Image 1 (tube, rainbow, N blue to C red):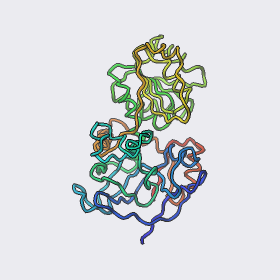
Image 2: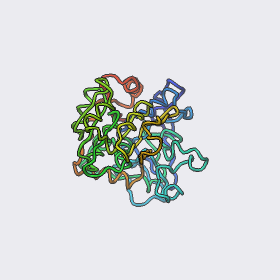
Image 3: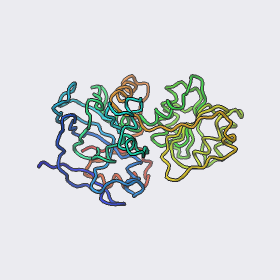
Length: 357
């Protein structure tokens, strides 16, 4: 049986490059030869044993590649075509999909546990950090890549761009709004870009890393707040003359950032939460106005599927935003273990790494 190289979860603390059989293609599947992929913060949680996956699983959920082989029932695509697939791969026909929430289309909806929704790649099926990836329900998930966009141009689409933009969309941002984005990692930076596209006219980015604050300004932040220079809540309230913000986007997943994002809201404002939390959250009575503040708290899992990917590709092709600055380092798949070492320890100003088999 033909083999391929893949980054495989062995045990907590060990993701190694090894060989696996190239997947067999079912009727609704597509085998995609991966040309570029990347490492996500969620992959680091897997590496550290903070998120459980099966031993022997291929990690990664952000594929860019070329169709190698199509299933017998797949139509509308051709072998040799450049494509991306979202990190979330809805079937298109589940109850969740037909309710308009395809991101929640997964085993979780059947068994009552919804935390991971439709996230399958590198979670419950083999993922993208390999020479090949098998895409399920290909006709619902493969999006053709325009010829004038490079792999790195579109590398953020499968997860980071979709997630960050969804934070702005779920916040219900309107033209003229003031928005605060807490934590300017890759997802927070994409949330800044999304807030600008939604029409926010004052975007405040909160972080402490100078390079991230600078990129935030390039992507649309009007003001930046260094939380190490003082209480970010106080700084934001001063910047808004005490009014607060119409929407805040939390992109880290900690009690401190969640609470700060709640405290800066104006009455009736919306907290859009993108962070992945590992402990119970506490909602302070005063920040929550004892439940009487007309505020909204909304959570979002990265939207996937080919229509979502088409829309994101359209944004990039139209030059409405440019996310290539988020790719700060490049590695060959053969060096994936070194890439994990760099990314997991956040050295050398790393934001995202491009992995090329």
